[in-house]
Image 1 (tube, rainbow, N blue to C red):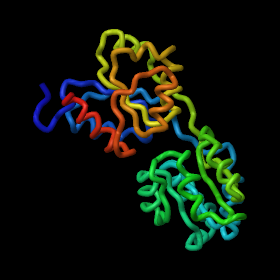
Image 2 (cartoon, helix red, strand yellow):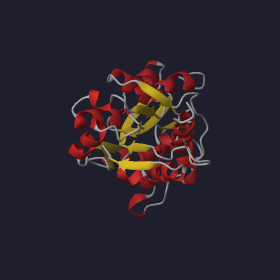
Image 3 (cartoon, rainbow, N blue to C red):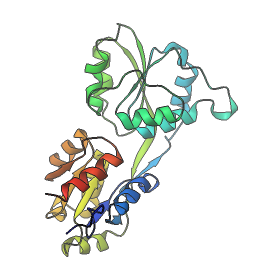
Length: 259
């Protein structure tokens, strides 16, 4: 039985988030009494070249919209403003769109306001959210990951916008001691696996050698796009964070222990 205030006591949670970004989830799980098995399957890296993003920032006055699709995108975009000792360009003329509250918070932490946020924290919701506000010929700068779905940018172009879809960071595969993890899974020592993006889903399954390794493990995901990717990969999703954030994911795990 879980201890009062420690609903994850006695549970082991597999955390697959990038090592540099897993700290908040690890701390939250441990505060809830859980034990963490850290197995990062992705890492976040700079683009192969900053030139496309820097050029777009240099012409920021030509755009009417800025679309940031993730907290990583917010961090990387903000980091390039005024890079190289230059003066950071003014963004006051832009309508800023953030995909999800975590992205909006990341922008706010860097002094960039959010004007519009889709009702769902997924890129596919961008066209519907922006359509009532877009005028034909509007210039849109979208900063995203290298592996992000290009379909939202294409949908905005179909609405008449002129979209520059620029890579702000890369998501790369990573992995630790997979044999030790397989042993733990075979022994039933892992209670939950947390998946925070489509990349964590595909990279974890590739590293393990198949979705069957997660049979018997409760799968917890952050957001509808990750759920879709997990189910498409053959996983049964048991826990979906109501709030698309690391806190939301940890809270969803805590609630699930009462099942």
